[in-house]
Amino acid sequence: MIKSFEDIQAIGKDSVDAYVASATALSKGFQTITAEAVDFSRKSFERGTEAFEKASSAKSFDKALEVQQGYAKEAYEAFLGEVNKLGELYLATAKEAYKPFEAKLASLTPKVTK
Image (cartoon, rainbow, N blue to C red; front, side):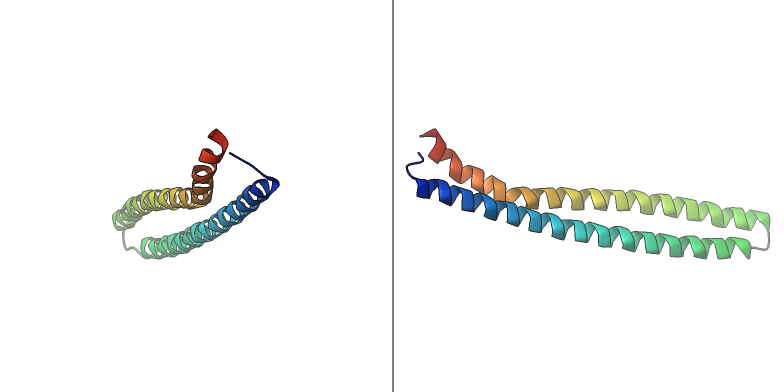
């Protein structure tokens, strides 16, 4: 049970610390996600440029179509892989951001319920 003003002060300080830790985790997570998205975009653009060059230098329409189909399949598979990877990064970021509050809630619950 909360017994004094000092207890309330300590709870307030702990809450601020939890918010700061959570914001730090969110910031780091979003930096990682942004870096991953930028890297994927760069690689995707490079693969697209390479496929365009191959298709435009093809000697026949069939060869150009084959190059385009290969690129489309590769781009689709890369996109699905990236979506899964970003989903995992978002989930990890959310878990890290919640940890300070989880610990805070666990420590606060016995004080309030007594």
